[in-house]
Image 1: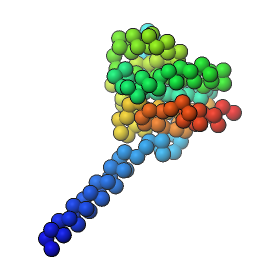
Image 2 (image 1 turned 60 degrees about the vertical axis):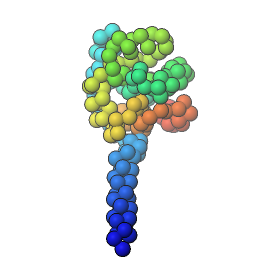
Image 3 (image 1 turned 90 degrees about the vertical axis):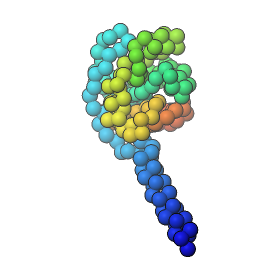
Image 4 (image 1 turned 120 degrees about the vertical axis):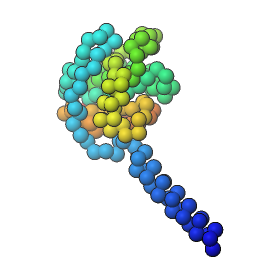
Length: 171
């Protein structure tokens, strides 16, 4: 009898933890649309950029780091998609979450064809403010032409997934 009670208590605790974990680690993309707040970050040359510079474009904003294998796997697709969709008003923006030297070396070697901004610790805070409630890296946002965040994606984001999200926004 006592053993059965302990099993039931353990099962209830496990259920409660499972429900809590599901709530805490639910994909951020399920959050409804919200307005992208203004922010400024420097690029690799130290020049400050305000996100409003790209107002009116479909933005794909990617928080990443050179120490993150899924981040590095995404970047060639981002480069190809930037080239493919630039004329249709799509702008990729990388926000690196680490020191300038490592990022600059990687960006140059990879021929990144979109702006790379240096977020550092401010980038981590910004990603959290923008819905990255689990601290995922990479973390990508898609913003429509009206400045509404329409998709949030923690973790690796495939080329096909991005195309599926941005295609309806191109009209």
